[in-house]
Length: 366
Image 1 (cartoon, one colour):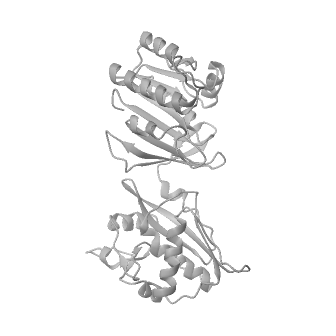
Image 2 (spheres, one colour):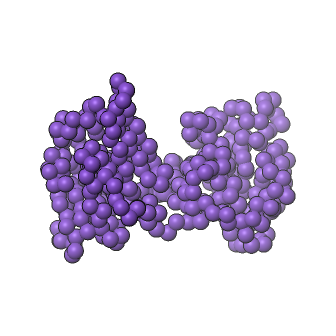
C-alpha cells in the first residue's frame, strides 16, 4: 500500500468485501493506525462479525457514520495511516443536494476522499458495489480518479473468491488472489491448482485438464464439454467461464479443419470451480474435450493440453509454456499435448510430451 493512494474494492453483494477489509485492517492495526468507517452497519454489528471471524483483539478504531464532513473531521483528529470507507455508495457530502448513492454524490465523495488522501498521505480503501453488468455502480469516472481498482469475484453461495486487479498505478495488474470462504472468513488458497482438480475416480468423456496463466503463475483447470443431439431447430452453444463468441469461433474451426460435423449438436462448455478466464491458451483443450464428448471416448486422466488455435487450424505457441508443463508434472500429469513451438529443449523424465502444429494432428494423436 502506497501512502496517499486510493484503492477501490468492488464486488457483488455477499462477495466478502467487508469481511476481507475487516480481516486486513485487523491484521494491519497491529503495526499501523487504522480507522474503519462503516456506513451500512452499526458498531455492534461490526464487532459481532469480528468475533465470529475470530479476529484477535487489536487497537482498530471504528466509526459508524455516513456524513463525509463528520468523518473527515474525525479522521483529522485521530490521523490514521489507513482509512477504510465501507461503502462509497452510502456516503454523502452536505453541500451536494442529491441523495446518497447518486452519480453526483458518489463522484464528489470520491473526489473529496482522493484529495484528502493526497494531502495527508493516508491510504484510503473504498468499498464499491457493482451493478448487474459487473461494473462499479455510479460514474465510470470513479475508476479514473482512484489509483488501484480491485474486483472481488464470486457469488454469495460459491465457496471460492478471486481477487483481480483491473488498474494499478503503483504495480502490476497481472496478479490473481484466490480465497476460500470459511466460517472464520476468507483464507488464502496456497495451491489453487489443487482445488480445481478434484476429479472423480472414473473420468468421463468430455473432460480434460488445461494450464492457463493467471498473473505470475500457472493454474491448472478442468474443462468439461457436453455434446448432445439438438432437439430444437437451432443448436445451442453455451459457455460458462469462457467467452461465448470464442466458443462459436472454435467450433467453426473444428468443423472446417478437424472435419468434425457437430453443426446439429448442442455444445456446452464449463470451467470447473466457477473460475472465469479469457486465456486463448485453452483453445486446443476446449476442442479436444468437445471431440471426446462427441465420440463418447474418455481421454487419459494424466494428460494436460494447452495451445492457441488460429482460424486456419494452426496451433500457436503460448507464453510461459515450460512453467505450465512443470506445474502439470508437479501434480502427477505424465502426458502432454502442446504447441510444437512450446516443446522443451530437454526431455522431462517420466513425461510424454507431444508437440503439434495443426488441429488435425492433435485430433489424430488422441
